[in-house]
Each structure stands twice: as structure tokens, then as C-alpha cells.
Image: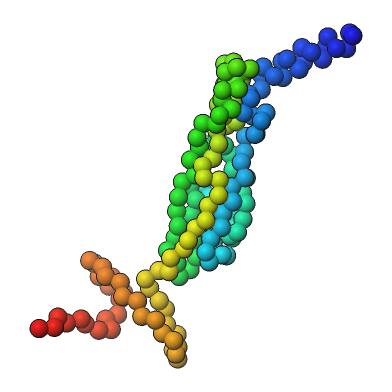
Length: 160
């Protein structure tokens, strides 16, 4: 009976000093990144993480920038936003302001949206040709400015 009196205050202290969201779903979240085609480079918050497909554990406390890129394809960029989790209501009922403060500081009161990313990479408008290519695809890109390093290979003329 005496040990129960010592344990009960410790349990109550733990409950009141820990936020509900932090207890229930933690301060990090798994985010999956895939791409078509696969094997693209993934950068999260300007740090190279690896190649698709991959799963990365991210802090719930912050929003995150994601860039998926591959040679010959346009880069795919997006923001993973943090949104308030429904577990905040658990703090109001059980943890009060202390639990809410803990969850706000640790990120436990947030969820990441989206937590699954499927980047559909589009081929870029430029192609490099090797000598002797038999299956050459030609891409034409219109631009308002000219780069001095470009080589003129032709001229379009208006038909009358």
C-alpha cells in the first residue's frame, strides 16, 4: 500500500507534464516518397536524403520542403505542412495548459500533411543527342531570351 502512494503521484506527474499528442503519436512522423520514374533524388529541407522510393521520419514541429529530381526530368517541389492534430482536445480535457505547452514545444500537437508523396516527373524539354543515334526525338523550347552559349541550328520562317 505504501508503494502505491509513491507510484500514484509519479504517474499523475507524468500525465500532467506530458502532452496527450506526444504520448499518443509522438513528435515525429513517417513520410513516404515515391516517384515515376523511380530512382529520383530526394531532398528534404535542402538535405539529400536518398533515392525514391523511400520513407523518412520527419519532425512534426515544422513544415518541410521536398524536392524530387532526376536528370532529364523537371524537378518536383512541394511543401509538407504541419496541421493541428485532433489530440489537442485531449490536452484540454486531460493535460490542461501544461500538456498543451508540452505538445506545442515538442511538436506532438501537429500532424504532417501530406504524409505520402508520389512525384510524377515530366520529361524536360531539352534532349542531348549522341552521334549515331537512330531514334532521335527533337524537342523545341520557346524562350524570350537568348543565351550566348547556344548554337544556332536553324531558323523558322513564316509561310505566306
